[in-house]
Length: 570
Image (cartoon, rainbow, N blue to C red; front, side, top):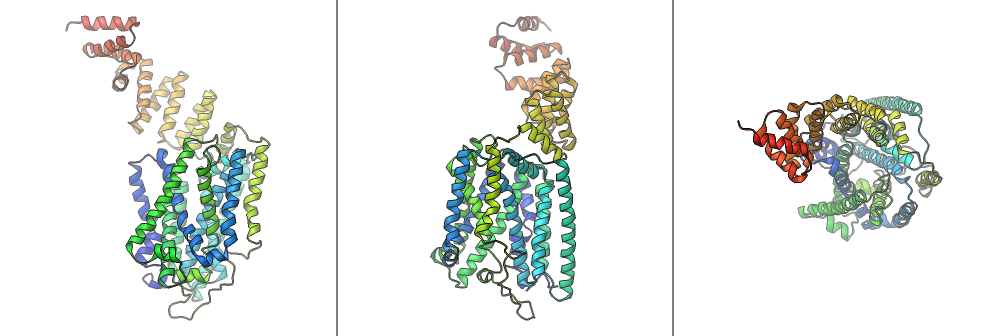
């Protein structure tokens, strides 16, 4: 196997490839975990996700619309696809249909897998590995391992199913889903074994796969699993993987376009201006990406502020949200055919000559279709995989087949019962419907699965206190305050619940801060004064009792307590 120090292994050089393409998670995760201590991603995560997710669309569009030869070759696609997609999204918006998010999630995961596959083929091509079987197994490895991450991600499964049900689709049988996931796991094991056997055989035949490819495969699959399955906060998990995906993409597009300019490969004026020599051009490129991402974040934020009932990208958010949804789908679609490593211009831009060190030139098989299998349908007919499911879901939704949300969540919890967050959401529905025993049961399951999830403790305590289960409420309020000392509402409720069971001395450390935070609440000031009286802290009680009477003079008990406190002579 080629030594890792060989420059023929790398797109740029060892350090830059490892930092920008292969081992990006090693520096992304520490930075984002540090940011997480200072930023509430439950509030700002969706905005950040829109910012990074949309920004990296621009480099692909720059290539599509500034590379004159590429534009001439795919002129119909580059002109018709934006108009076609915009028309679809406007139609869905006017009809308030919700089938599109299902395709967004699935196509997005496919797109991420295929980007990794593209890098695998680049690194193998760098060492002259052009075996069709190897290419097919690389593709299959990306599909099954990314699919495994999706199927074992409770948040991703829930997102797909919720969008699926909101579009009127029938409920999925939990047994069928479990069988499908088991079958996928078996398929993943079989394909992984086939990949390893093929790599061993190719190595023995003197055609060893690139060691960088193997390293990239391990880091990408492992990081996708970490972000989708192991990270408890769904938005944060999506965000860190999106950053990984975007850094790879933006760096590769810059490398490719700079290579076209440096090697005189027909770059146009705009390409030459943006990707010519000079550090300032890198800053300009970065600034343009960030500016485009900012537009996406702004429109995404508009959708958050004015969502429709399902919180999807469609509905009342308006034209600009739809426009940047078109941007996402165009990015997915264009990248499926403008970055094929088999194409001569792509290899030239990346400086790939198709040779092994010390060996003869190996033909890049440029005539072989991209992907693992020959194309069965012309490019236009492949849109059926987008249009037909969307039309089917639209017909179902127009016929009013959407199930109540509580039934949707019950079904999803039965499919992925290992998710504490889903039990919490189901409990919220039960609480809203005043099914308190069921709500307490679901909150308890959520806490069993995720003991440090503070909102579940608060909600369980609220329901328990409302139904008279004060000791249970106190236990969970205490845990909530321990997990999040800044949750003043939980602290307030803890204080009043302790007073209800006459645990006055325990209530005071929480009640007095509550009274200071609510100086205009007559009842809270009265309770604070009365509790201090109970503990014989009469002088301290006077200001609270006076304030209570100032706010509400019709309180005979407060007046009596105040007279007693003011008349006391130590």
